[in-house]
Image (cartoon, rainbow, N blue to C red; front, side, top):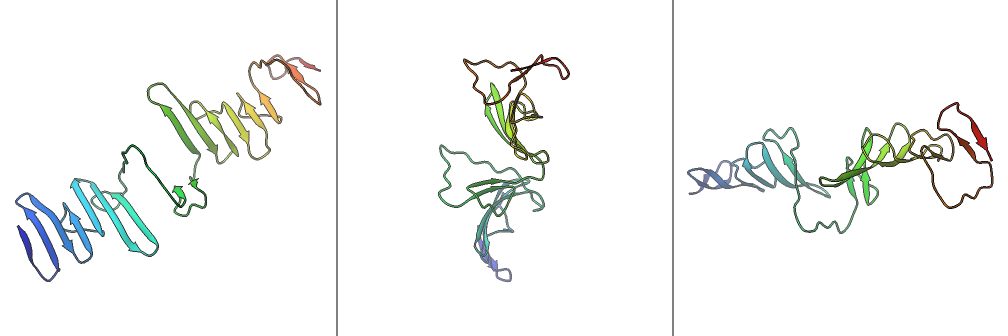
Length: 193
């Protein structure tokens, strides 16, 4: 049934006995809703609404919202390839200044996961000036203290430019200074070469 008799609200509605299929009101089009809340509003399930909005200057938005428009819902992208051909991408920021900018009030983490096998994390610990790699998202396997430039391998508290906690193997060591060897304990004996 096509209804065009709602002149007061200037609506055009296409509906079946099951409900509204298409509603046009002013510059808004609704699919699955009689009250579109965006330029294009699609819904087919409770608490699932997709908005395509172009009502703000210099900005177009795609939003996934609940029925009350008070909370964001998951938005998934499936495809063999996704391309962002121009501009910057922001996660947690609406004004990215780099190709990819991640903003967080807490620690920022990127997780790399091979499904069912293993995962690794690229982490920035905001409150500790730490950037590095982790195998569990909590401790650093390799970390750089961005405050003083120290690098830690197996430790998150390097006391020198390079601090390795654990066994080291190699074919040669070249140095312009001292090498201090310890027995793995805090106050244990040291050998300085």
